[in-house]
Length: 228
Image (cartoon, rainbow, N blue to C red; front, top):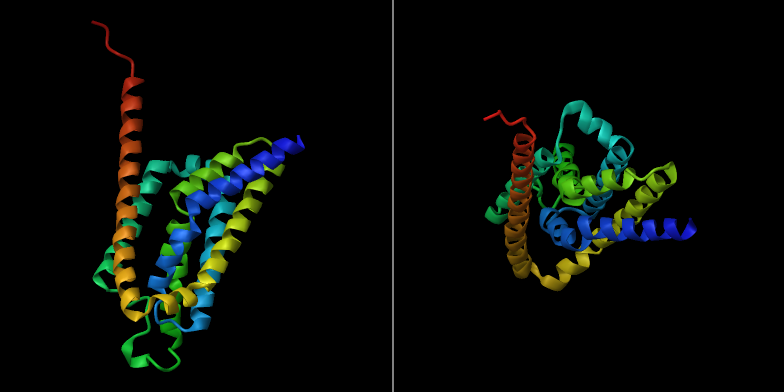
């Protein structure tokens, strides 16, 4: 039994790390928080991982019930998440991130509270969800929660806590990455990450559309055929 739990814990840790992928999320965090004060970046990183953790815990404990109650499918969740991510990526690609960066009239000084709230909003979307806790992460959490017993559920949540902590640490190392890249290279990385984020969003939408089409075909095949 102990070996079973250890194997499950390692599987959950590897699965969450591969899907949440904090390594690929870090450049996106850099691009979205470019020019923000240190305390704002720290708050965004903290709120992003806490949002992702809340989403995973929420769906781990009641994901199947929620999906059945509202008639939500993973295909619809992937399509909606893909649209959100694609919009963010398009704005990054065009350099239009006004809701994320400090406006020019407050640069060099302490930004007002409404600007800080606008900056912090990216912690929930797109960073916390759907980039860190996206449809794949939610589906993984629901799948792990299908194992019998509360202990498996607790191990699954604990594995994502570890991944969230690693994500926060990597986000906090962002200033060193910025200093290493320099201003010009950072602009190039921002546009490049915008293209990648938009591509991720399109891929999520295509996956959701494919799942929806497959579910539709299966439902049609299950219909009773008329007698000849």
